[in-house]
Image 1 (cartoon, rainbow, N blue to C red):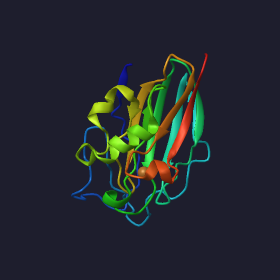
Image 2: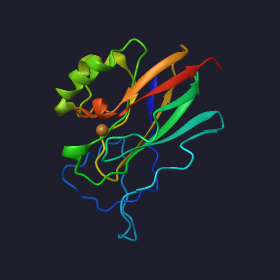
Image 3: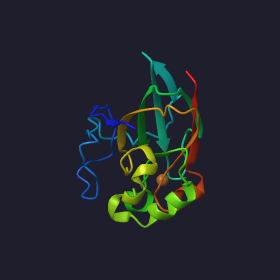
Image 4: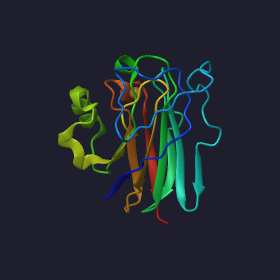
Length: 182
Ligand SMILES: [Cu+2]
């Protein structure tokens, strides 16, 4: 499965940068909010799923109540997906970090979550389970955002996604990407 990360720079709003615990990897772009007074994004997008030039564009959020804004969506098999995930919460990353991990159809979500919880040094992405991951975002702190691009699986079916921060899946941070025959 080919998996491509983009380096898109998005106009993000932040309460602050320079947090020593932030993950300033190449996958996540940060920008200061010029106004400086607007809190991290607190509203969910009105239309979180759209199709632009054949690309399914997903705007997903995660919050301090351990909820995604989207618990399901549908994509055509083998089609390009561009997903922007934003942590719209305010709690520190170490206590309330979020990511989105898309699992293969064969993956066992419970087993993955257990392994992920023990993989804190890998931002809760267990290396031994890489074959069970279709795509995943970076682990994000409050106000952070990450955009990934990947190709939807060729095989129609239901693909689970979850936040792999310890216990978040069981708190409800999970959903299903339904892959349909094009
Ligand atoms: Cu989470």
